[in-house]
Image (cartoon, rainbow, N blue to C red; front, side, top):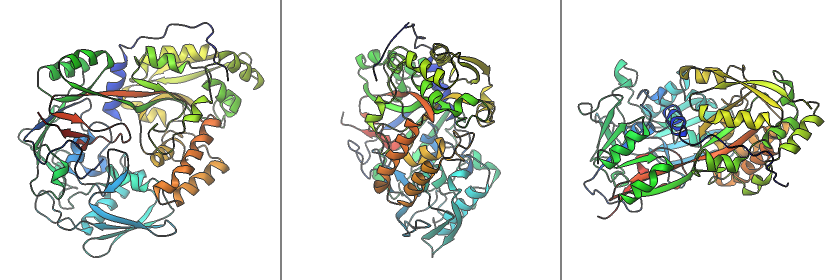
Length: 517
């Protein structure tokens, strides 16, 4: 398809994007010996993050940069290494039954909570059962689990209602933490976490909402994977303040905007760019046209995909820190297919023709939610759609009502920015009938068959081909209109290095190592 650029318009500049990313990060894995890390090094990792941890109670843990804190206190059953692969955690091994309906975990011996109490299969069962039955952000991650049973002191067996390809990924994140049964239901659990992880929260030095101080446990089973005896996580919502803290030596690691990189490099900081950590997606939620009839026609959805000059948006709004895309999957993940990026070129003329063929020669109107993190992009989105005949009315939504507004079915389409995850988790979130981004519960016989096939392939490597087919189906049928990936610049002081490359976007201190002076 030939790209055309008629009536090119200047796009909104990049300054407000810092605000968008701050809002996104505030709301939204394990090598035994990371490269470049010493067994001790005597260093303190002082990390600046944007979002304040909402709670340390296991059932209320959420992803995002606050994971740097809770993932240091709690063990998870599985972990993600820095290449995005699954690795043993508290569970030293796991095995599925041939039909994918039973998952057996072997819990590592000798583990202890910070209170000295042994970690047993009973503790794992108690945490999983509480996670499954307590309303919270991770309850749906265990929706396929019918029951949890113990097999001796170190065996745990999950009986599933159906095969679930995303379960192992879930057990490497918040849904897989192990809480202390004696304390996790107490009133103080939200602020005083008791876990079996590599660090404990220093309550005397911690100021909730401001700074979290973590002290490494000398008796931790995998101590060598954590080279920092002390970790200080400072919440600094303002990006300028974060840069000033780096320059002043108050923190020695943090993420910064593209415009700030040059000055920090000149000051001797190491900078690493991760091209994709989140995706900006126009979600075409009402794919059957129940509320907005035009979206039920695939030609309309394809036309919307042709409305965006994605490369220009990345260059001008994101200042090059990102990548144009028509996919929702991590470009370093198993579902991503570079060939799909050619599916939709920027072509307003052809988009108008498709709308006319679908019966909308004069376009149509749509209301979309104006969210805290979408405001910098709204003028460009509205203008791009207006150029093909679609008029957008933005309705302001208070920050605390963001999630409820998106799942309300009030909005047939909406723009959002979500952190990238593993392929099974992306399918669950974006496309499964119960997914938070599949608001209207779209289903399709071919798609459902592919998901079933992926779920039954209990080996993630064997499921990769099927996830690519799922990706191709959703792109070719224009179930969404992805626009760009958002990149991140990680800046570290001399002696500390960032080990990630974007293959895993799980926020863990295992992404940081020690280098020689």
